[in-house]
Image (cartoon, rainbow, N blue to C red; front, side, top):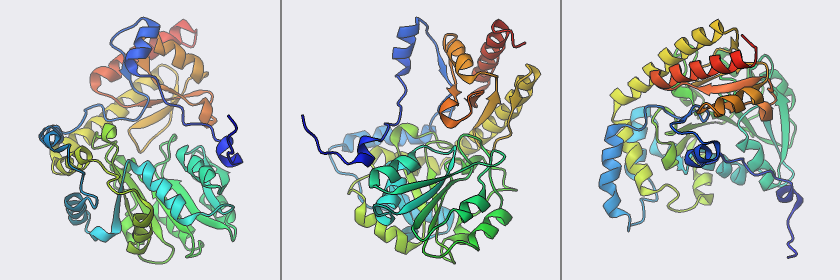
Length: 366
């Protein structure tokens, strides 16, 4: 087979999917594993969302609403924005792709940090754009270095705030100073996948920036705090003019029916939402304290996950895997000594702690 493939596609490395939990258990000969590696909501979806989705299944022979009309209007009212300033996607990943497709031509540049969410750079490369990457500084985005990296070819700047995998944020004063020196023909994208977990005292309000000066787009998701990761639904808040361009390139019916119905119901369940936040914050504090008592260094986080310095992240990950506890090694993010842990239920947190303690003891770390 003689395929003609451009080099930017040929050299792309596929996003590494994990094996199904059942297959992993079969290979390792274990049962009852817990997954604390993918930053999912351990409580699961809202009961209201489950009920609404179940009821919608009889309508699967119909196409979904291509405009997400009811969801858009409900969310717009909740956030006090116009429905014209919201674009929904098949996960916030699709919004990243739509932004790159709409505003980056081959040879043009996009600024990101390292480490950060891997999908930004993959989308840019697939489009034929040029990735300009700036290392984090002190586990945070180096906004000044990013600003200095801007060239006449820069079209987008992606900033995940909080950052994945470090869980760090920048505050309003830092961001304001940064934006003042970014020209108005560049779009600054705030990926706020974990914004629900951020302490209100340090949380930015992206709506303040949407229609003044340098254009700002905020990306959000129903995968984390709302527990709908399996439905793949996210949204972007942005100036209506930017939204119009994204609507021109997005696929029709890009958000499926159960996703729209589930997200709409999840928005109405404030009790479940608050329960998720309370469980996450309590679990985070408990795990930090207990893990540090084992002699490991943990890092503060404004998300539902955090980093732990365990000496050799890959070895600890593999050993814990055999104990039925799945965490995330950080070697591919440039942190070979670390693992990343997602906060779970109290029972899951206790089991993780025991598995980590046993593993560290077996390896002579404690």
